Amino acid sequence: MTNLSNKLSLLPNRTQSRKLKGIIAALTCSLSFSCENPALYDQYQAINNITWEKDKEYYFTFEVKDISVPYDLTLEVRNNNLYPYQNLWLFCSEEQPIGPLRRDTIECMLADEFGKWHGHGISLYQSSFPIHSQYKFPHAGQYTFSFRQGMRDDALKGIQEIGFSVRLSR
Image (spheres, helix red, strand yellow):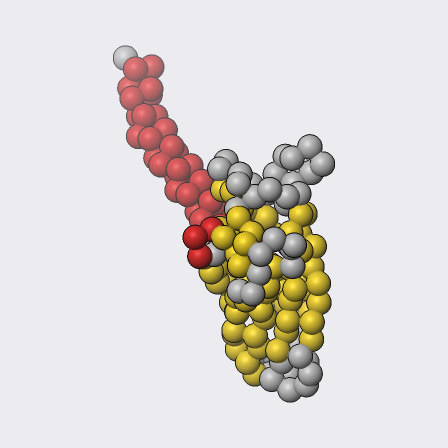
């Protein structure tokens, strides 16, 4: 009898132990997801009719208040299987609150030489392309980044969305 009563007295402790393990697991998961760098700016824009016209430019405007800390600027591209190329050329413009307009050309490699998409997804692939890492904005104020496709096609099919994010550097 003593053996049976000892076993019965252990049951609540095992149940409490399982509950405690469940709570710890839930807290660990929530903390790991909350450790991502906070975004100063994170927006996507849909490409009209999944066809990016040659003269269509997409604008991303945000406010920078703290110029003492570095930021990571990232371009996001979402494409589908209809995109006919391995890469995507973009013309990027950066308008600062003070100073001249800065322009650059960016090549985004969306697939390897065998046509396998680099991005993650199944029928819609998302790829990230760093524009600046550890970038310190020179002035506080409003910044606008714009992107225009630089491919030879007048109407480029298969790009569904582009996005732009500004996050504190780690």
